[in-house]
Image (cartoon, helix red, strand yellow):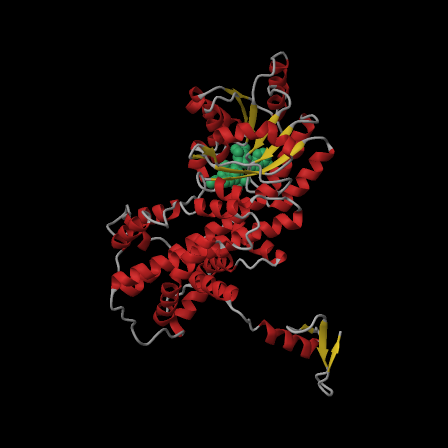
Length: 492
Ligand code: NDP
């Protein structure tokens, strides 16, 4: 859509610049972010491609602070204090590029453009480099917390230059969620670091939700608990180590009745989970980084499997399940086992996510402080949880921690939960309840702690069929065996 700028530009030419910050894109997120900024005392210039959204914002919420409505990007640029700061909250992908091209035409060197959408960090790196050539600071900012967070305090993960953060940081920190007085916003690192961390945040969110869903499925299938009973169990879990936004909303969903009838709502919702792509991106990038995020990957695949309705219908007819029912002697003990398994699996999924952030940070030279990431995820975002404080403490104590799993607190917590975890995975297998998240994270735990792994055999096979060589435990160097000859060994 082309902009009609003439009239509005004329009217603003004579005005002194007055707005602290601009927001373009006033759908759900942009509108709420603009309101949050205005409520925190910033003078906010607002713009949207379709004028009706701008008018609606002013009509419905204009009294919440000082807004400056504008009807073109040129006008938006004209009413901003210099250096200008513009937050772009439009649809991710090509629309963002379109808007950035238009903004580049009306901004000047030294101005700051913020992309608060869910961009892929590779796109953010490209955009940052393009705009840098024009002297414009481009800051990719991950924002989590959905509609409600944008309005009342999200968790904010900004990338970009430290110089841009000097101007932008105080504004973003003023609108972020606060935990113990600390804003859930920090300068994550240069160029795409913010969007990278947001991507991994979303990957962890997938894993966390999958593990909760598996706990629900097990307790419901094996113990025959009703959704209302399960809501009570999850409410109880929210009082302890598992206290988190996702456990809280699990209880709420399970306690809710179908507004069209008397059944539990969860029973009338189609069992095919959707995804917008950030979980998939996390796994794709993790593969490139060689970062084993198996908990996240299983969560993404579980959503994909759920969506294969035709395959599931065909399999339901033909594939046999367990022939014997599983009996649980003490239901309360089993509930406790599932709770401990959930906590242990969750620790692994988060440990994998933090390992991935470290791997990305090393590859792109971002110098990300993992303790600060845990700090800004404690509030505002979807994975906000009590135990992020523990993660913060672990990285503050030891910034070079090789894995969260070996921090004394987490090592103890996971080791203490392992007996329950193993019982839960065996009961699930016997009962035919799929628990890909629990199983994959337990396998990761065992893989990490094993003295010897069967990777030795894999290396032997690789050398046999492809002369890929192997290393020895008792000598330096790489070796090849003459498999088809006399089986002598030579140094490669
Ligand atoms: P949408 O992703 O639905 O995007 C709609 C907005 O983009 C409208 O303002 C629309 O303008 C504008 N737009 C689309 N195409 C263009 C274009 N070619 N030129 C100019 N403007 C265009 O909005 P949301 O508020 O849901 O999300 C905004 C961003 O925030 C997205 O990147 C999203 O992924 C991200 N995000 C969303 C979250 C959420 O919970 N919704 C959470 C965190 C991030 P118009 O009114 O004229 O159509």
